[in-house]
Length: 112
Length: 115
Image (cartoon, rainbow over all chains, first blue to last red; front, side, top):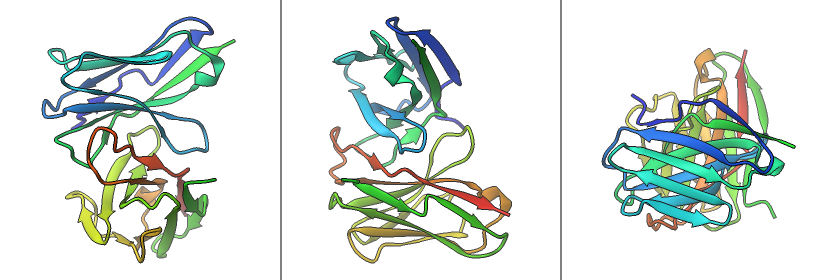
């Protein structure tokens, strides 16, 4: 039973364009969502998060949008850079819990 | 200035032969986690320690055990590895405030191969 789903295993975009990574969830108890980024041979690193009481959070080139009614969130990267090439994991958590529930990840490739 | 260190990075063991994976941290965080990530799957939480308090996930097999002798170190013991236990094992830490800013910091992982 996957509570967090990232249905696109991979995404390829051109440098300078927008990258949009999508994530769906089924657990309506999640009240916080996070994106982690993972380079090969490294552990995931925290990128950006959003509370369920918000619909948008922006940090530089990265923006996360949350649509609670659709149980959907997306990560926008504008403009995309080759250094953004990595695997991006979406995760949800509930009630201040320590437990993160991850999706399978989407591998982003940004072509020069 | 590595913060979460995992040793070894690659571990090969034989079917049924006990194996121990190591994690250490320089962040002085209260919480240490162990995740299992199989190929093309989501990282899955096995258990975590809040200080010395051990918290096991309900679906973690008994074959997996953990020890935390002090704040800095945490070990994952696999008592009788099966072929299905081949995976990347990720260690993570957090302060344990459970708030929105309580980010988890991950180590690079140990890739376990079972022959």
